[in-house]
Length: 117
Image 1 (cartoon, rainbow, N blue to C red):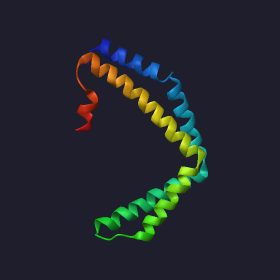
Image 2 (cartoon, helix red, strand yellow):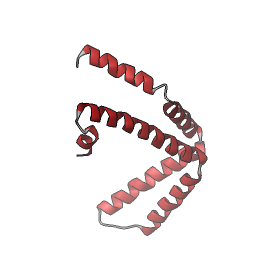
Image 3 (cartoon, rainbow, N blue to C red):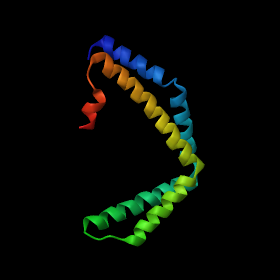
């Protein structure tokens, strides 16, 4: 990569870290990590999800396990830290997608399309 391009990419990344959406994302991420209840729910969800997938791969469907996953997901959706994190994450992704779209348009290559394949 050309040094000039590398410098500009670094400058762009530095500017992104100054965005309100990025700062808010980091704050919400920190709050989520500090929410012990949400962290336990997330660990429980991941464990149950792995169990569910393992059973599905062996051809078994466990309705009770599916119900447990739904219940945990409902509890997660009710946690303010989880909701705030997801909303902040989506706002950041939207902003980054706009940047990517501008670059794509300028160089006449749909970068997002390349990554969807």
